[in-house]
Length: 376
Ligand SMILES: Cc1ncc(COP(=O)(O)O)c(C=O)c1O
View 1: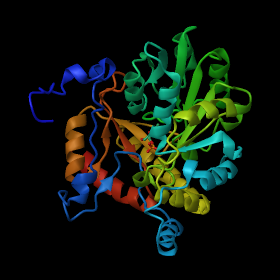
View 2 (view 1 turned 30 degrees about the vertical axis):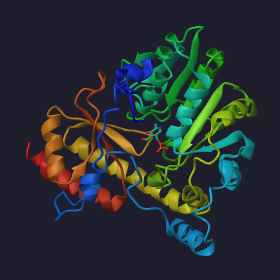
View 3 (view 1 turned 45 degrees about the vertical axis):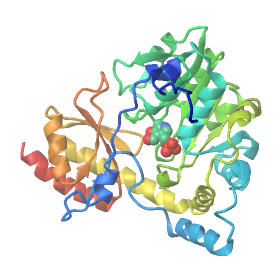
């Protein structure tokens, strides 16, 4: 507006007090470096930093996307199917639950944010065992909630005693990644059940982003535990990270509350089409999961040969510790291997996380790592 109105600079004064306090989610991905061709052209980049699938989605998925565009000229100008109804039914079959007990979201990040929006008021206590998937913390902090970190003494040991020792009568939410990112540690169904029972006054989120690799779920605990919400994603085993699609599963009472806040059109039409096609071609995902398992064994054996600590995991990544971490990461980048430095976690000194890929990719990875490690 012109005239004598003076603007207030949109600086700190306008930003909510809770957001002011948030430390930005500091993260880097090798994606743009690889796509821009900045990396060495002679050797194929091995993008092993974000636990994505290392292979593209199946032809069935690609064809479904192409066909949806060819067969319906309004597919892109119309909003997508509200609440992803068709996909919810397909997911109901996959999860062995009623479609009504599922909400499809724009990535499982969106599901985690939705849960925080619906359940957290400023000051509410949230218990999170560390190390964990830290993006969740941003959602907790943006609600002004009170984060209670549980620094696990041995992050590679399933340990519910430490978690439960931080639960108080005022705990509102407990966040458990199962298998955990970045350690790959899996809590048993019995352990999760114990947490749900003892903390029956709290919402327990079990983040099963890596469920397909672990092959174990706590889905059936939903019937006995009205406080349990499970989140899952199509970004990992299903190879659809770029499309952003995930979902949550819980009981009808909680779904009704969550659905009040969920934007019914937040999942794109292409994401819905792709996820539906992926679920119809489950064998493709299962073959990949089997390859990842073989790759894990190959890589663990390889590190053992070099007497380097590498930890078994129930997911599509392993954690590795090296005394000269920075130098090693530098050398790996020179060989076009991109992994994730996880040493900023207090209890993970000198650790990096490496995503597992196909057997062919692992053979190539090992030959490059062999060269690198022999140079130390
Ligand atoms: C444990 C965990 N939860 C959620 C996510 C986010 O998944 P999405 O791509 O579905 O948002 C990730 C991604 O790395 C993750 O590791």
